[in-house]
Length: 169
Image (cartoon, rainbow, N blue to C red; front, side):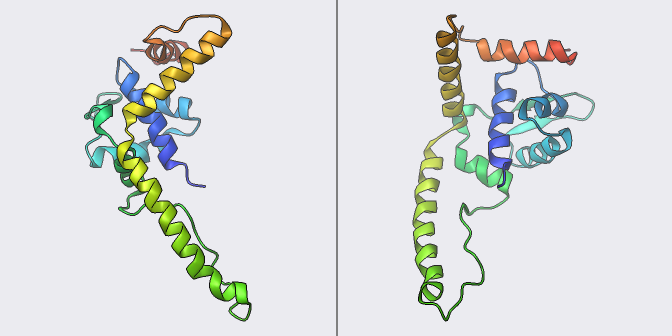
């Protein structure tokens, strides 16, 4: 399964919530991947004007506000396609079998309808929605643990992680 989309959302939340630019090593440590993979994603996101990074300056910054970035535009940017594609159909069904003969058109139609529904939903959801859901989850987890989450808890955690890894400038 392709993880570019979820990795990009994770990465953009980090960049958006960080008080200072984050570099690919810092982002990779949080996403749980390597910096090379992150750089491939940042190249795609830079091309469409969502983030920027400059040679000689470590880290990336948002160029758009989270509420202006739909999840559909983000999907299209990292997947480098205009078409949402979630489902594949096996290639060689047996035409001599009644199911094998009809499975492709049945599934193609159903999958197309499902992908259209998902596309419509992604068009109205934004990166800001993801950030808000994350803040709610953090607050709920902290409440369950018996402490109160400050509004800037996510930013504090990002900064603390930078300090721990020695990457805080």
